[in-house]
Image (tube, rainbow, N blue to C red; front, side):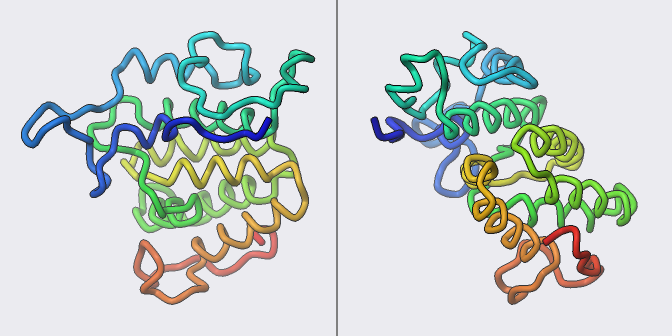
Length: 210
């Protein structure tokens, strides 16, 4: 069967059109994820998709029938599992949403580099390590490290876009496409009007990040 979503992904269910917390009515208590929900998502870190019962209610990807009969899950469901787990880590103890539509991983890490919380070289190395990963598993390990740093500086990113990157990562052309976008957003190759951060103090392009 086609892997169509039935509802918005979990991280998108709680934000409004202004990227703030959704409210049932004006002035009502924000409908943010609960600590219990985020803890359930974090239980998926380092574990295979479909093996953590606490995460089952949060999946929106419909698994392939043939794979399901074999006890397997689709590549896209694997990607959603990873994204959910990382979102649970990112949103932990944060007052504002850590899902921000339109801000790619490259743009988010660019903000991290501009924050001066870490040396530019250290951020460059971590970002390059993620960008040059050749497997979904290797990428996930590097992403976990980057997400921890982003959480420390309260820098959000687009988790729906990250899911798409994860889903295409096992395929060479897919990796190349994601890498090109990450590099564009991190190094500021596009017009400053299209970037999240000023053009000052941008890193010098490195061949390993393309």
